[in-house]
Image (cartoon, rainbow, N blue to C red):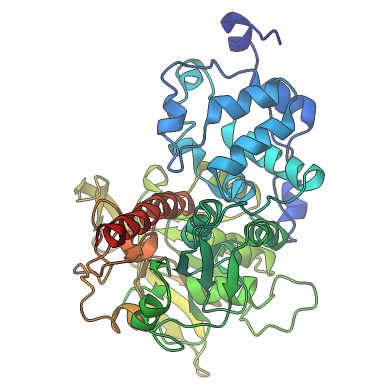
Length: 473
């Protein structure tokens, strides 16, 4: 099939994503981005220059064969595009929505050097959604290895590892602590960014491959790691870093102050986003969220949708240092979110009934760069002020929960309590692998997925080596 010349491809302008109108979406939890029409998707895919060295593939943590699936889209072979995505990515409808492509595959896209990069993420979403409407779920492999492997946690890393291992022919069981699969995809990301039915669909595709999911299993309580290793041939730990980090300032124990984990879990997993929900959660005229990452952005946009007339994001650095996705910042600005830059909280102030009524803050200025490479915020003397607020959400990071790791004395941890691994994702315990936030600390969905994919390959090699050693013996 004939394709446009390089000159013709360069002349094609990047498509625009359909979106809910800002004033309307700020009052509901329906998905903001509305997807691409097929003709727009095909035209966008034609913008790919089919570079020989494929920098976009190297920029993708799960190594999706991006130019190949884009050319299938351009040619109108959507089933072929979907087949490539299913082979390379266990959760394409998810990554097409929440992956920070602008810092990965699209950042290194050659088209971006003279204009805008190809909209790889939007096209991934388009193909995944098309496949859900037009294709049967994937089928389990015809040949089984006879090995039984366990995955702890059904977040992005765990689901990815489970899918890869199932396609290899291993019997896979996921242990999930909560009552529904999805991990941070379900309880950490708001409905307006990643609808729950998308998570359900991705999980169902893995179950179609033969993955078994057992919920309400708390590893470290319900079952120990040692028991898992006695029952299974190998195990991948991907239980995340779900322990909230607070700012350790006076007043954090007042009513109306939440960690981002609790706030988003109450909204997502407990259904506070549903009309008429009776989920207990504080609401008020003014909500202030502290932090500058994607979780902070999710929190402040959620507060707006729950009815706060003023939803404010307070960040101790400037706009340019915010780690949140550019698209989420843009959407927040359009929805009327207020941004307070170069401020740091000193104390939450309460009323006579123990509810937060204000936060005392101080202005900051940027000094020399710190270990992260960003300029360190320095207090400005005499700049303290009070900001009235009814709700405070602390979104400054998470740390590893010791519930699992503390039950395995021989498991090596770093100084932050994260699991140490070797180059193959193996921990200090033979047969026990790990990845995602429990190893990295707070990171992105796609990095956890990359860990899951790599761990699956390492686990497969480990199991094959066990066979060879047994045969030699």
